[in-house]
Image 1: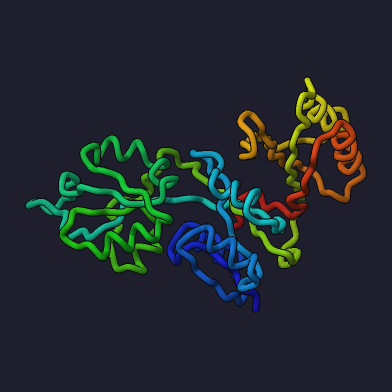
Image 2 (image 1 turned 135 degrees about the vertical axis):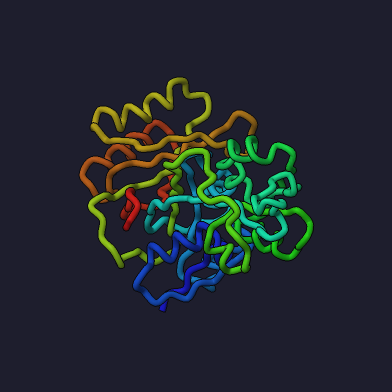
Length: 289
């Protein structure tokens, strides 16, 4: 039986994990912090870690990217996309007015992960402009905190699974700013993922440009362009070594063992770039129903 490290039970990560591995017998190890999720696999406690890396509304999750790049060296083995459906959760009986309707003025604080809060700003501005927001390490933790503080006027943003786990009510469902809200998850670990097959294979690399080389980024992109290799994502992040130094996180719609990609990487290295392979893996780019 495989052991998989993931954020707390009831979080979107937990739901996405159980969706992706449905039908398989898995031992899930839940952790409060993303650092503990990573370190569980680094230290051999789990076979894989599940990392939310990108969201439709908020873009990249910078903290998780930095851990993947700076703190650990474990390859990406698969990726998939899962819908992030956020809900306002709390003790409904404490929030009803005399007519039996939700009185949003009774909610004084909304607790959740910062990415989830950012996904629901329109709802918060419209319904809860008076309420303060508090950031915690996961949506599931926010729901737990709301449960443990009854009669406080505290609510949380999270999943229906988390609400059921903690015995709280869904006060308002589907409160994200856009219906098309999806999160991209990475499966990282040392063992290749073989449970499902995908026609789409991606490769992720990290490119650090040589210093004092005008036009280096242009040459990097040209190495892919003239070979007609599609890049689905390119993002710069600071190397944290020197102000103004950046690495480029590049997702490539091609397997590493294809004919063209190795030669493109060799061309990039020939101009003095450092290339780190983060993984070549099956990509389940559509929500698996």
